[in-house]
Image 1 (cartoon, helix red, strand yellow):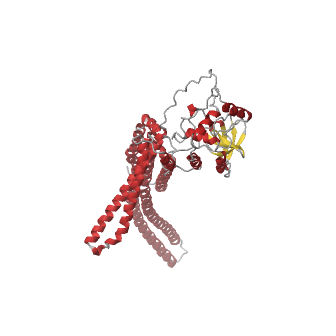
Image 2 (tube, one colour; image 1 turned 30 degrees about the vertical axis):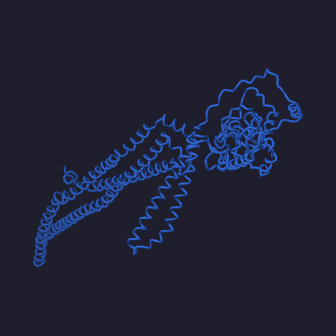
Length: 592
């Protein structure tokens, strides 16, 4: 099958068909270009998505990624980042292996097509010229033949007429002979031209046109083969990244299989374990025996009946210890004030109680004790251990620096031209002092750690006061003896707590020293969802539907600090109120 023999008369249709083939190729190039753009955009969106959910450095989110589920999620994000990279590879390979090559090939194809059809038109013009020459020779031959016939007829007519002179007859005979000769010449020319045309026409239809159409056919077939190869390359580019994409997906599956629920549960225990022992049984209090009162007891009791009971929920700066549940049973009988007063009179006042009040106030304002005594025992042990590890790393770093300086000094001593050994003495002394300071600091924290772990006896009262061991910010006011041994919010208990509670009633004048400070500004408002009876120190009673000001947001312990008026503020459970913070003006932030 050859276009030159089968389509010898379809020059115009072949021209249209080959142009259509080039258009199809350009359309395919455009398709691949758009595919590469889609791959790039998809890869970019995947990378942005992965980056969006990456944990921020030095944030709380980074600490959450110690859990296996969060680690698996982080691995998934990393794998998705690699997955996006493979789509970028697809885009790059399609651009280099398909788009660029096809665009160059289209330009070459257009030039070849133009050349072939130019040769075809040139052959057409040549055969048309030969045809015109043949027609001209034919018409001239026909004209000369007609002129010769007319001349012959005129001669015969003159020759038959007796009235015509012999000279006229001879003239007519000569004219007829001339016309016959011209006709013969035209006949010879026409015959020659006809033979030449037939030869050109045979070559045109059997040589030139078949050759040109064969070239066009080969060009078109190469175009078809090329577009087929490009489609194969298109599939292979995708196929090449399938193994790597499979590895990314396998990595996600492996990360998912690495999730260990038991390990995560253990991490929760390590993160939030306080180290406190559960409270023991409450002793039975027998109220059937008559109470023995002294004269002083009666006088103090009558004085107590005549005055309203002191309340500590209004201006207290303390916060309710979240582990202490509100007792739903009837109130326990409080120890008579006279007993507490007699006990106070027989004990020696200690000024460090008021220092503890100052320490509690400083903790409330955001200061953290150096020995982390404000934390529960288990959390304190972890913080101290971490601090010791960090200090040991710093000591090792300084030690390595000292060794390096020492070696450099030895080199200078052996080769004075390299430097002055004395110039390193100051730096060496400074590093040595830093190592000594770090070691002293490490010993201090190791002592605190040993105390927490029970390896050393408890420190003396003076050491406790210096380190800020005791935090007096959240004690209950005037409680019974069974409650004296309850743990404080900072996780540290001292035997002086009961005595400090006794002094707290008489320390009103000292409280004024701290309460005269500027009240905290309101950061929003809240609405009470339920009625809450604030009976513990630091709490405040609210009624359902009541609107109050928020002066301190929930810090994660389940309590929110509110204010009813300038002189009445305290803490309520966060779940009892609906909070509207000013900094979030777009909507309310509700804690349920």
